[in-house]
Image (cartoon, rainbow, N blue to C red):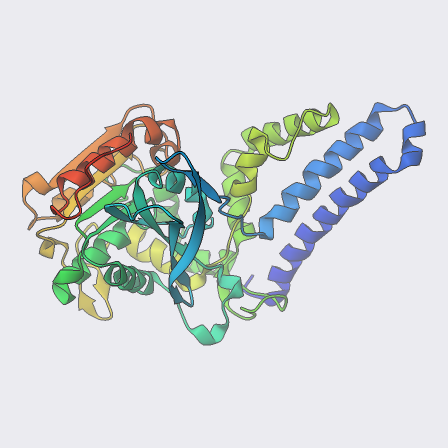
Length: 420
């Protein structure tokens, strides 16, 4: 499958389905069709509307959609997304609330690179923006990065995080969500040896696979069953001629999306069937629950092949983080060297991706950290998404994380007031 033609064929299939949806929608909207009192016409228009939107958003990066924010003064302040550090494979961005005094808490939200854009954390950003300065790692789509920019694997990801932490300074509080949790831990340990003064004050790891074998799931079982050769042969493709990254080896977003959808095929099929019926009855809208969810869920990005393969090999198969055997640029990274960064883990009791036990394993690796600087929390009845963006995050986890941050902040950066 490692051919440009395969990549272009997938894009052609997506484009064809989008065109079919647009055509059906246009035919149903043609004035002469109103002369035919047949409910099939309405159904065809509804099918076209849902189909066109579904396949169109697969290649579009969603907008953050955070334009204004109401502050304590009762006024709406503009929110400006500033690029603090620009790098080939990802940027460090800052959500600057114009006209608001700088907030005491400075948070680096490390977004996952697992198929979706950083905008997946939109609701997390909005909840933290209330009383924090929020910075986010905004990863780029691999198909848009020229081959001349070189490779990008788990070690490069780790070094990017260390650069971002250095840029933000020692008063930073890092929150890593899901996939980047083990690499954020490694980046902090790397700084502990190379540049101790640049370490963050706290590190919060949310639902990440620190030790995938601690509590096996379907995801970890898949990593065990499939060989690296099989993954490379069946999943890796070359970017086609349409994009700047032509020739780059990637794990395509469309292929990832097919995997995501197949895991809950019945639920997704039912959701789209119901949306077509709602559209036929005139009950659908641009911002209804279905479109709000799938606008984000269907927007996928390509990952570099070396990042995807090294993640499976080194994090899941060889468990280098879990065994404290990870290396960066040929140098061993000793997690036990972290001695003054407070670390908290958060897990969901019903998380079927990073099950309870996988993330809290980080605390056992922190042999040089005093017990009072370690904390953990398991949220009852919360799944994977809920621990960073759902009701469980808003009502329970976010206040606990902010309390942890405040308890481990220096006098100059301790928040005097918290809005829960």
